[in-house]
Amino acid sequence: MSKTSTDAVEWSLPRGLIVLLSAASAVLVVAGTRAASEIIGPVFLAVVLTIAMSPVGRYLRRHGWPAWAWRRVSVRSGMRIWKI
Image (cartoon, rainbow, N blue to C red; front, side):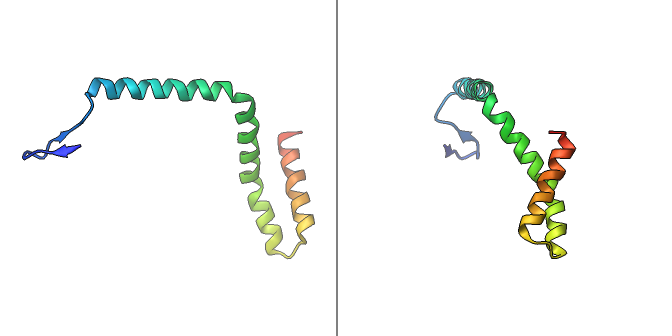
């Protein structure tokens, strides 16, 4: 990428090739996500549960509960919310 006297950006690859490579990359990302959906789904569920139960654990820690107790309350609360 170099600048000319008119401050226009000159790309080393043609614009069409850049668009084609971007589209191909997007297709690969979507295909990879679909192929790994059995792993990605539970991971996202775990992240959502962790984020949702974080305030409960923070509140209990702030009020002096022992670590094992606030962890157990957080896990049980998450299980009850999702009815697992």
